Amino acid sequence: MCSMLRPNEVGRSVSVVIPLHNKAAYIKRALDSVLAQTHQDFEVIVVDDGSTDGSEITVERCTDARVRMVRQENAGVSAARNRGIAEAHADLIAFLDADDEWLPTHLDTVMRMRQRYPECGAYATAERIVETGSRSRTRTFPTIPASPWEGIIPSFFRTVLIDGDPVNSSSVAIPKRVLDRIGAFPVGVRRGEDTYMWSRIALRYPIAYSRQVGEVTHREAECRACNGPLPLDNPILEHLEKALAEGRVRAGESLADVAEYTNRLRINHAMSCITAGLPEKARVHLRAATSTKLFSRSRRLLYALTFAPPAMGRLALRGRLRRAKPDSG
Image 1 (cartoon, rainbow, N blue to C red):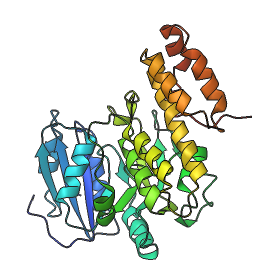
Image 2: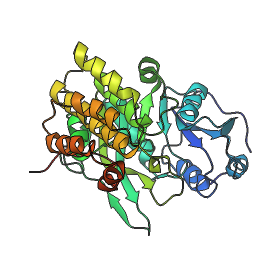
Image 3: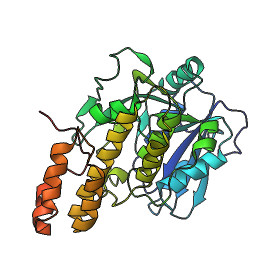
Image 4: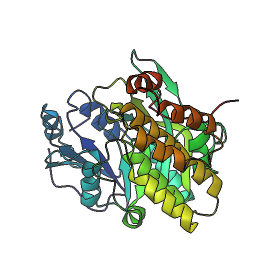
């Protein structure tokens, strides 16, 4: 439990970065879950990103010497994470959203994987999702070996294509040397800024994953960033297209899988453009996705919708903007 806010100590093995914006109802739970870790050698950096609901008061009341808060004007979650990275003393950065929580062995699992797989660019534990009404589920990934497996994900882009993203912003830890090479979280991207980071890492480094559940994502929490609309553009598209053109994909990943992942992003952006009443822009994305095999049916349907009245397009796509998945059959 939070026990006086004093200057943080240098030399911790992990820096925990928590971006905070108007999460007064949840930040204590997040902090308590960090302080309850079986691995206790850490510092916690809470970046208050211009909260207006008193969220910072809970942090100020925390008297654990390892916890400190930095404050900035509201600039978005990516800017808050980047500020936390800049403030960190450790050479491993673990991230936790203010409305989520860790199970007690999360950091122990991360540290074990880091010792076993020092070449990796990121380390993530399995996720439990709590939905509205307290229903919970643990995500499964058929392309990753079954529990109690722990190791390097065989093909990150294949897993994302078939099963969804095994890495999220509350389950991941990234070495600072990797962040120095890859670059910061993209500021100004409304959604997908975390996916942008994982993809950039996966193009250069293997990613380690543990089937042991270490993190709880609370989707019942209010004002989650992932609840907003998809962006019409995303910098990862340009990054992936350049990597494909130059053949810059690490050994162990397939160029074909990276290409299909890129096509999926194009399909997602086309859906957003149709919903926003921008059919011409949607057609640009869809024409660029002509090589797709997994999403060919979706591409044809979306292309037809670009010639339909805008209201019809929005109605047809209602509920489908979360993620384009491979066509079945």
